[in-house]
Image (tube, rainbow, N blue to C red; front, side, top):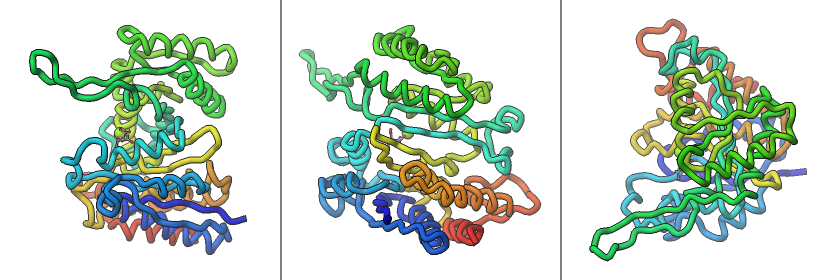
Length: 362
Ligand code: IPM
Ligand code: MG
């Protein structure tokens, strides 16, 4: 049976890196008869240029009908001065909300070959394997009311609302417990319960779920401490579950521990298993069209898509192995290049890296 992937390359380095993932998919289709079809569509700044909005209803319908979505990245300075309601980022938030992609999985795994690219000492990060489970369709990102209003004294006031319903906390909580059961069986719930009522409720719900998952050890941590612990002793964590905004911040922090945000894929899933897969990094407009972006996070996002949404574990394993092989061969894009002279290391471009992965697939 054939499967269909929707490709949303987006802006900045998006098209370059998605192009490399497509090369990998083409090769796998050929080699393993995957029968995975794909189609390109627009989201973000490119959609604004073409249609005046960052995401059209037609694109949402195509995404909904697909078996999985692979996203590059959206946004750039060209669209930063537009009205907030039609900025590229709105397209991303809209597709997350429309498809109810509430569970965002952001792994931070250190490839042993890149231990020296981390900003932390090798012994602190060697063997690092953390998974951040970020709630993606609620919290302050979507809470109402929101806006900028003029007060009686003429001063302007910006306001947003942090809200979480019990049911929203419960579904991301259960999701995180189940994932922890399949990994190291340790779950750390991160919030700010010493200050925020929302976080107090979050903690209560997590506590109440724990009884259903006796094999998982649940702990709680305030977000400020969690940020500190991530850069002090990151290996203490297995799975972290947290809300939308805290997850946004902590996942960038965790990503950097692995040497480069250019290596990390992510998955955003709904309850029915439909998923959107994307690199954790952004559109990096400053390095767009120079052929220097690292395509591996996108190639690894394709790996996750094949594994989790299409059930093609063999093809996913082949990609994971090929990425390990090219790193073993010493190939590095600029972001993962060690400083100073390194024996056996070759600097490669975006497309050379993609080609090397294709070659490693055999
Ligand atoms: C992310 C990004 C997005 C977010 C932006 C681009 C809206 O930072 O996916 O982490 O804040 O969720
Ligand atoms: Mg972010």
